[in-house]
Length: 158
Image (cartoon, rainbow, N blue to C red; front, side, top):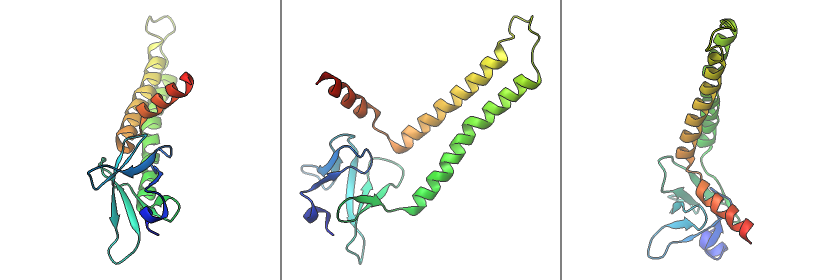
């Protein structure tokens, strides 16, 4: 189950699922040719399993080589990411619900010049919190938006 002997030193990137990871010249690390993430390959002590660890992020993203592909090696990471996803959704929905409920329960007089403002505030609350959530998600996962955009532009130019 050695990664380098079972494939010709390349495999699909476990992050973007689009590029191929291969050895970086003159380095003891691997890199994806699509999303440009850098990985380190480690062997578990007293085991033949090889673990691929993402080196260019704060989070401990790890995968184990099964013989054909990389599989998630950290069940705690999946469990934690589900809770973080639920908290992120609550970060967007709870403030929006509070602003919307306030606009519904205490509607302004229709003759007031700023009668539109409570609805605007509820929408702005949703958009603002969604932008914060997407920014945190992008920083945590380091999703390669620019690489995907370049790929889309290349596919339309063909």
